[in-house]
Length: 74
Image 1 (cartoon, one colour):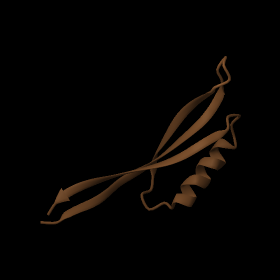
Image 2 (cartoon, rainbow, N blue to C red; image 1 turned 60 degrees about the vertical axis):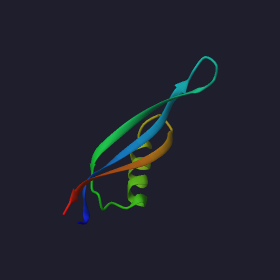
Image 3 (cartoon, rainbow, N blue to C red; image 1 turned 120 degrees about the vertical axis):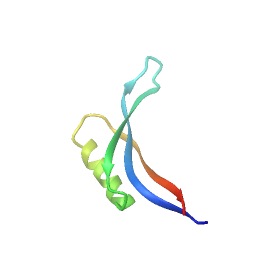
Image 4 (cartoon, rainbow, N blue to C red; image 1 turned 90 degrees about the vertical axis):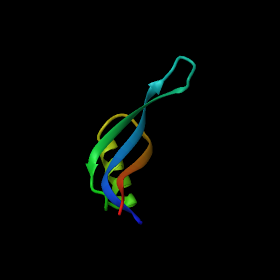
């Protein structure tokens, strides 16, 4: 029997810096954006995150792509 993977969706996870602690360490937060098409390219996802975060005062630190799939045994 073969296992079939069916894409369910993609989530863009952006990490950004909101400030510094008293000792100078960065304070970071993460924002998840769901509803991203599974066939979106990595480049498109990164550019979308960069464009969104250019509109706010916090610098973007990293962008992560989380894909989820359903596995079925056929």
